[in-house]
Image (cartoon, rainbow, N blue to C red; front, side, top):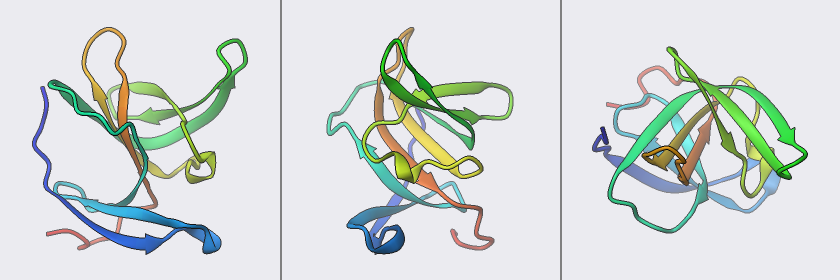
Length: 120
């Protein structure tokens, strides 16, 4: 079941003088997150998976860098497209993906720890 999410965005510098990233504060989350991947396409039925990054790993046969998030009642694994330096164990990640047997990643946001009172 897809949820409607209010998003506010602003430009903010990335870590250690790298190029600018898009900072996004999700309407229902107290976490400031950076959009680190955007497939630049829309899908009719999407879902969100959000949680703390618990593991970073590489699948040698597929040639893909992956990350795993703990969503509470389950863990899910997703590819790490683009700049892998944004992904760190302990950080929060939010993945927008298609629904179905083989979900496709549409967008990934990554952020640090919770900031109390950061979102109304």
